[in-house]
Image 1 (cartoon, rainbow, N blue to C red):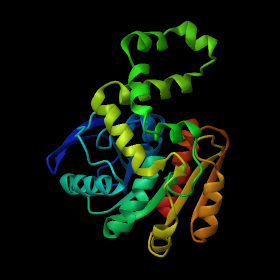
Image 2: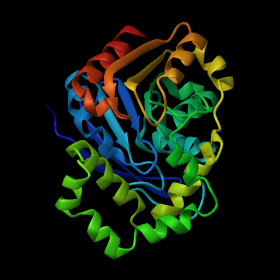
Image 3: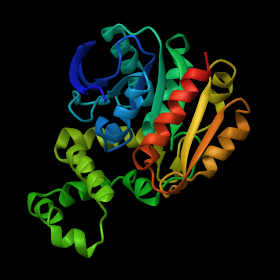
Image 4: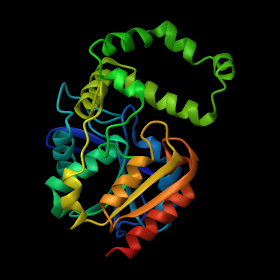
Length: 283
């Protein structure tokens, strides 16, 4: 496996951090994470994807990870414009976009507004394809949620969350702990929390997601699309994947057994095989 290198680039005045691996001449696969996350969500998949000849770039979206966290600009259109600036800054003319959760919604929006820059779409447990979403995310869209989260992130409570005894009592798995650590990094300071709520409210309301298939109708005619899900996703139901597959008869659907909202981590090798085959078989 090639080394994974962390880099930064200045894109229209904003510092964007990203991880990169794979051959410089390989087909470009751009990975985008979800809410309260960062590029480390792809840690298990980057190596296997690079081993299959892809040039893999995993972004920290604006407002997340090690990228800049400006005071505003977290609607889907803002993320799409930031992504276009990033591709220009690193000299990439076209790429396959692979988005998880919020990243999937960004990929769809970007593909609609910047079609000349997109070769394919891979939507992993993606947002924006239906109304249903986990009740906790709907609750986070309520007006009082930022104040409640600020209380929950106070230093004394944060220290308690790190106690192994609590982890054992709650029967948290290593996977759960990895997710919590990423969420802790994302929400650990006021700019990160502000970015989280601004991005969340752009795609989720208390009644559910703000998604539709309208943009997908256009993309279906121009952009090869693959949907990847877990059969028991408790954040965004797999029914969204099947409905999107029916709506996009030319698309490809991969459903992995078991639960979880991150099939790219739980089934990293199989995920890499499916994505590499999709890239190779869709000119």
